[in-house]
Amino acid sequence: MPPLPVLIDCDTGVDDALALLLAARSPSLDILGVTCVAGNIGLVAVVSNTLTVLDAAQRPEIPVAPGYDRPLLAGFANSEFENASHVHGEDGLGLPDWPRSSRPPDPRHAIDLIAEILAVAPEPVTLIALAPLTNLAGFVQRHPALLPCIARIVSMGGSAFSGGNMTAAAEFNIGCDPEAAAVVYNSGVPITLYGLDVFRQVTLTPAEVDLLEGAGQPWSPLLGGLLRYVQRRFGQAKPGLGDAGTVAATILPETLTIHPHRVDIELAGTHTRGMTVVDRRVASKDAHHAAPPNADVAYAIDARRAARLFVETLVE
Ligand code: BDR
Ligand code: CA
Image (cartoon, rainbow, N blue to C red; front, side, top):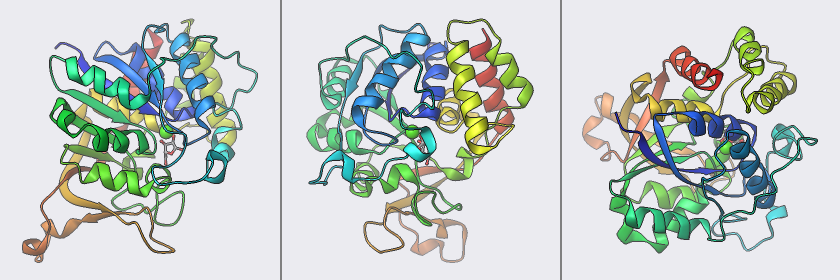
């Protein structure tokens, strides 16, 4: 099988870093570009972390472009919207002393990088979205003629059953920019919703952490540092792979159990803004009322298989 052409949009972020390492070292993916957006931390640090991770993965040729530094409709400075530095550390990787890349990012804006890559791609490209959907919404609005060049968006965000993590109803990536998520979910592009229901399932064993940390590859020290940070920060002997599960599920879609549903993004409500409203009436006596599906919603994942793929890819 030839590698799957992909673009990755991220807010690096500890688990985005794990995702980038897996993607960058996987022979199953051809990464055409990486775009950055504010989310876990501010945009400048996201870009710096992303370049640093790709350097460690020995993939400095992959273009990395900065995108939005604030939500689509925000009229405020970046500092005024919520980030997740309480989870990912002030530096975003939980490794403030780790030397950052000195490489400059690509001079293009994320939207322009995506457009230029899609315009010449010989086949439709899969977008792996690991962050607030601001860049992708901006792209949808600016370049509607290029939407047929997107094969699918595999989006870490929302949930079908698990509620939220940012609020009781909103998962972080959707809750940071609900209007952007609504634009993407109404775009007509095929979407896989990789939500909290599956996101939390993919974990490593302590023995796998030891193996990866000691693998002697150029990226092993960074990978070990990230995994040890997750273990310490969450008191988890078995660290969760988070966004890296989204990449694993893109490489091995058969690991996911999916069901097609209509998904809408709640834009209002003190308690509900940012919620993914999944119309699950398709499986009930009210099926005839269900709206036509716009997303394949992941209900379950073969978590061991996804974790094994991560280990096998990054040990070598
Ligand atoms: C998502 O939010 C971020 O903190 C993580 O990187 C992940 O993409 C989980 O809700
Ligand atoms: Ca992320």
